[in-house]
Image (cartoon, rainbow, N blue to C red; front, side, top):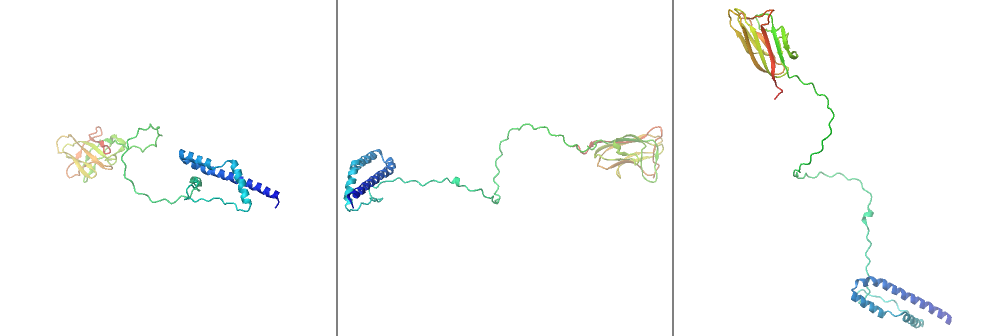
Length: 291
């Protein structure tokens, strides 16, 4: 090998050694920077002083590099980089880099299907009654409702008369009237001589007759087929007016009428076409629907 080639290789080797040293210094600065920030101020100043004493000047680096190149260019092997054990004193302390944190919320997947409904839980205890709330605002007026059913009549009254006399026979006879004074809602039937109850309640009834000379007067006010009260007058030489009245509690479809007793004895009531001597009247006092 010529002298020119040997000098070229020496310059290249020196340039490589300078780059290696500068790289090592840079790594040490990066590694020791965080460590020095954790060391107390007194210890940090001591370490900086020791590093200044240990680190040679650039001229010393160049001289040392030339000596090293001359020494090892004669055939000696280059020294390997020094290794440290974690338990050796003076081992460089490197700051541990924390592992990266992953935000799990950004890894949220798509919404799954709705599951089956679970069993109903037990009922809880009844809570105490809360305080009464404030009165709400008045609502709007509602619309008019549909018309209701027609009210049932709570009135009933009648008053009828007879202008013809009536004599007894072999059987009981209902007294039929031929003159109508009042017949509200036609509850009294002029053909049968009976009052039919359409409004249940308390009623008042009155019967007036004129007796016949030398004849007996014997009538009953009937409720359905039951004898309720009697109107009676004995045989007399003169005729008189005789009356009977009562109050009855009637149910719907009850019947009230007057019956002449059958002819076991001479029995008659008097009247004529000019005057009305026989009258039968009744009216509702209190309907059952009222309290």
